[in-house]
Amino acid sequence: MNNEVYRFKVGNFECIVVNDGTFAYPQPAQIFFANAPQDRLEQVLGEHSLDPKQWEQYVSPYPSLVINTGHHRVLVDTGAGSMAPTTGKLIPNLHAEGIVPEDIDTVILTHGHPDHIGGNIDSEGKPAFPNARYVMWKDEWDFWASEPDLKELEVDEHIKQLLLTFARNNLPPIQGQLSLVDRETEIVPGIHALAASGHTPGHMAVAISSGREQLLCIADAALHPIHLGQPDWYSVFDLAPEQALASKRRLMDKAAGEKALVFAFHFPFPGLGYIIQKEEGWQWQPIETTG
Ligand SMILES: [Zn+2]
Image 1 (cartoon, rainbow, N blue to C red):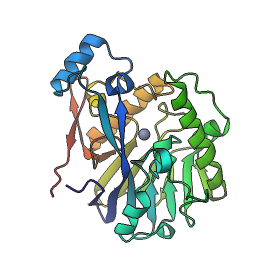
Image 2 (spheres, helix red, strand yellow):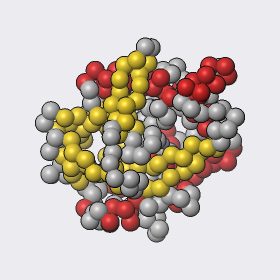
Image 3 (cartoon, helix red, strand yellow):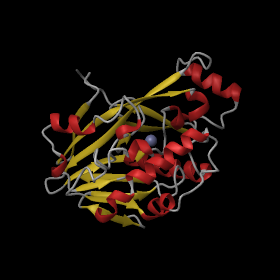
């Protein structure tokens, strides 16, 4: 199938998952399942046909979501931009769908990590979406503006520097178009901000509804489908792991209870599926895609 764009509808809203590219995470077991007991990890990976010693990389898509509500053109996250040679394809992929940056009136940033804010600016450092209001959770903006040291994260120093550099370069230029939210509120009609802190201090999920249909964008509340089956496992990127797990539980229970379609950023493209309650956790049921 086409791994760059995927069109679908939520009620009357026309949606497109548009990929910015991919990134290969090395040592995915250690990165994604930081606190998993070794024996249990091997067992669970085996159940997913993965050999812990052979599983050398996880290739994640970096998708943005375009929602045309009829009144607003909304973009959720802006990809990784210049982060890697394999990223930065959002704008050409939007063009191929007949969308130019000027068409977007609202950009929702789920959090301040490089793979979600990388396309905020153009090659001259100006906002890439000149007519858009950029919406972010206030705690998230304040956190990155405070020049954090990220000492909580057990990742290599160069990864911390990557996170800080992207926040430093890609957030201040949008300040003139910024709209901060500090509670669960409607961003545009049919699109709500949901608090989902833990991965980062102001990590935001997005609930989209039109007619009787719902889409829940969970951003990085789960990075891999195995995070659903193992509700207590978290990743090295979660700044406040216990809070992240509580946010994951709340979102998954909501998605399962409401039978909402879910958009999971780092899951295999297009990252759309349903959450089924299973034992202590949940199971990922990707939608059928053709082509
Ligand atoms: Zn991410």
